[in-house]
Image 1 (cartoon, rainbow, N blue to C red):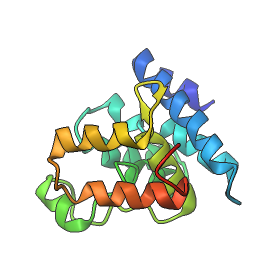
Image 2: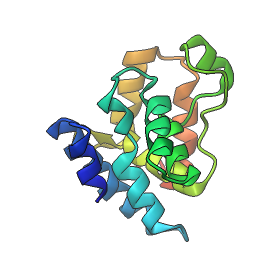
Image 3: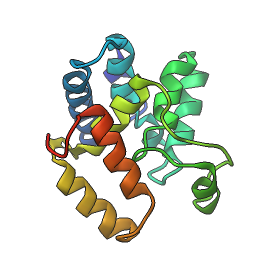
Image 4: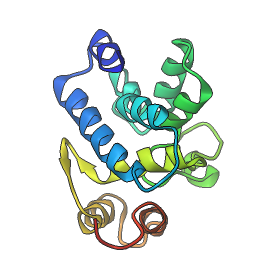
Length: 162
């Protein structure tokens, strides 16, 4: 059903394939934890639903609103809202032009989907080194998101390797 929602919103095939790949990775990461698997699956498939309207960083906010408007519970819309990188604190959100709030993943399900997204480039699994290199190229070598990503990786994967 969730993939059908993406198709209904005219999400491009590459985005649907990315969402499916993030879902596969999230389910693998979930195997080490006692989590709501259905929530992880739904959240992973719909984490980028906001990209049906925008490809900017605000796709997380837009996605959360779409999901709320569709009647999804906060547990699902918060996955979309908090999935970028390892989350965005309020101060950085303001600098990025996002509404002033924290976008840091709080629940284990939110953290798993956010990191599964980190470890998925298009529809391929990647390792932490790839992720760090990509973020350094995008944001600079000393951007505060990089230590957050490493910390999240250690929490979810438990080491510096996949």
